[in-house]
Amino acid sequence: MFPQDRRYTKDHEWVLVQGGQGTVGVTDYAQKQLGDVVYLELPEPGRSLKAHETFGTVESVKAVSELFAPISGEVLEVNSALVAKPERINSDPHGEAWMIRVRVADPSQLAGLLDAAAYQAYVDSEAK
Image (cartoon, rainbow, N blue to C red; front, side):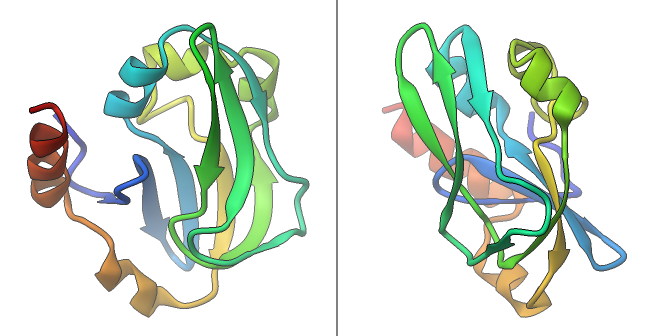
């Protein structure tokens, strides 16, 4: 259910690291919990993030939720198309609905994140 090429947080964000850059978004589980997404606030490029730091908010018809950085790094790019159409989070959370791209500051932080199987087990335990 969750792509094998990413690492996951218990806050339901994912990161896909390729060549020193990390692409960050929320998981399919997160978007289902949120319901229909209506608003998204993301940081400006150039901002430095620390792992577990809030980097934005996502608002649905149900609630407003903070977004947490899975790893430390500098924001290189923001998905402005997603900010304009935040409802894409509900239809493609692991693809077109990526949120930010960061320059990875400390690749060793990835070891502290969950792989797809561990994240699936975590989600299964949360659902009980």
